[in-house]
Length: 54
Figure (spheres, rainbow, N blue to C red):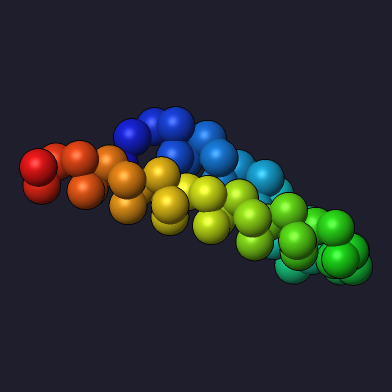
């Protein structure tokens, strides 16, 4: 994995840490944003893998 993938995961880790450590509540917007960001990472990785097979 490239470093850029880890950079995109920083907000997800921050949200998880705030819930676990600070006992903050997760909003629907946070869940939706996290879901879409992870889907984007999966789709971009899938596109790179398909390009390597050709």
